[in-house]
Length: 292
Image 1 (tube, rainbow, N blue to C red):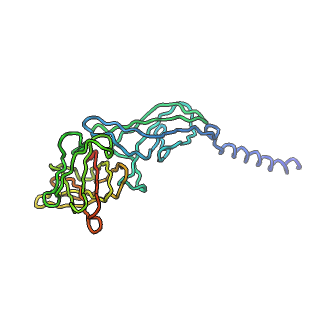
Image 2: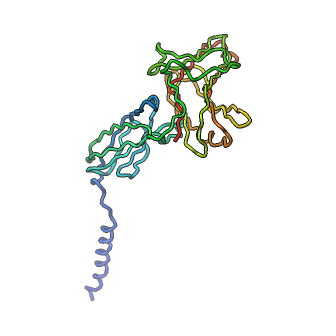
Image 3: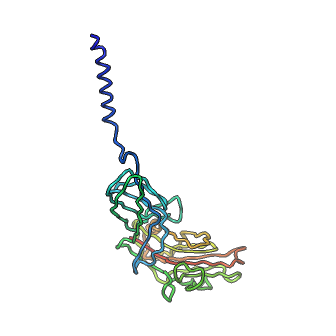
């Protein structure tokens, strides 16, 4: 009877220990991670896609199609894997230039590489991405040719946008320059010299633009409807002492214009009050309308 009295607690203890051991998961790599390091992402383009200028600020990373998450560049990401694996990288941007709206840029392809990961070691990945081959560029103005496709409004502008080919204000080659000297120009408005068709129905559409400016300016669309033309201002650019690249999502604006036949892109600036004495300078480059 003494043996029976102690046998039940002993058996219970053994069973509980076995159950705990069965539920305990083995930690990969012994809990020691490998690291994937990405400092920058390079963008390339072909002759029909315009400049490779970009402002990739973030990356979305997958290992063997499993998402690791989104990371701001440069980054070093721990991963509990070792051996040979497939790494997929997406290039991310600040949509509309806003830090709170970081998204993968939908027109850049994935970068893929097969590599080996080793615990407690860093694997440096240097991605290069390009546009998907079926992306459409209905409008590109990079100011590399002799003419300029942005023309001044004959009523609201008394100065031309010029093609600047030399000097310290260039980004990577010729650019467009708008000068509003003190006391001379109060308003400028420039628009495309031809209409472009932009697809609605939720088709993803962006404007890419490099700019530098010491005075705010705006962009928008002329919407050509069957019976009227409507001017819609969509975005304002604040001052930027250095060249800045921005990606503006036009998808919802274009899709809302159900009856539109086509569109014209425009840029404008206004000097009022004390600003009339200011020497305004606005520089534009690598203007692209892009959709899938």
